[in-house]
Image (cartoon, rainbow, N blue to C red):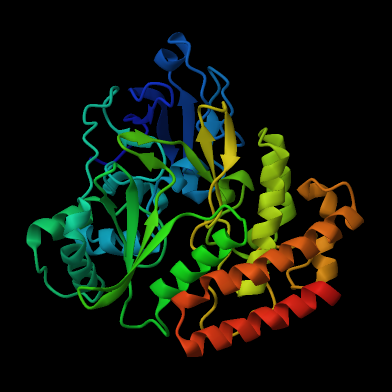
Length: 417
């Protein structure tokens, strides 16, 4: 794709949530180093369409030029559509992109096939290629072998598959991954074990996702493949895809108007109560704030201190005509130590895991007050404890003992202060 200049717009396409057709929602234009503008397309407005692609940063206002305030002049929701660490590493190798390149370069080089959410980008005024196929599930063994070779900088085992992995290096996260489609039309992220892992990370992720679901929380579905091409692999169902339909998504980083990765000024904005406030302001129902509270507590108990702002998201549910908190994903217990802090604040100025920190901002999560929240917290902790027993069969004896001891320790802190 050619370089975008101030005279060459980049068009933003949206798959309509009502009928699946692709439309041009707006255009992005770089207006100088580290600066860019977005405007909803006149054709989008004239067609009577009014879906906002980012309810916080790009509310639907025809004729308005929105200036990007972060990411070197790229709007937050477009940064969401860029690859993260893994995809960026793949694209740097393939296209000799220099370290420190702005996110716009990755947006341009990553293909539309595997982008997160329902957006695509291009230089034509109309979307011209809606072929969005991913490798079917029977290729799982081959896919895992090729991902391993790619992550270890080895030559391609299957050149055609390697080319496809490069072309679809759009999904987020730091670990090697790719998307597959099963026979039922569901899409899954395939995340294999890598040689530098300190533990069987795919198994730990699968266990944590199963544990969260068994605790009554809304966690993304996962399937464990203990030995696919000689590696442990977890398959995580994508909540932004179903058959040929894509669903609009926005990260918590975008909702909180902060960057990821971020400096100290940015991370000071990373907060569960602020995220709960954002859910309320965009019209999500109160149960989503209660669910977010539950995930915060679950992360504290299981020791997932990778709960950063790109590991939370919202998804647009057209049947409800509203944005909803997306299922929990990328929840992995720290394999090395028991964390006593989370990455997002549990309450104003408090990153430390403690009962009073959990309860301090109860009203912002939708509770009537501290006592109401405390009663719910105790019920939730009992559910999490019971959920561990339901999911522990996924662990070997050593890890079961380690994580059970961690759970009991953290439950003691959260029950008594």
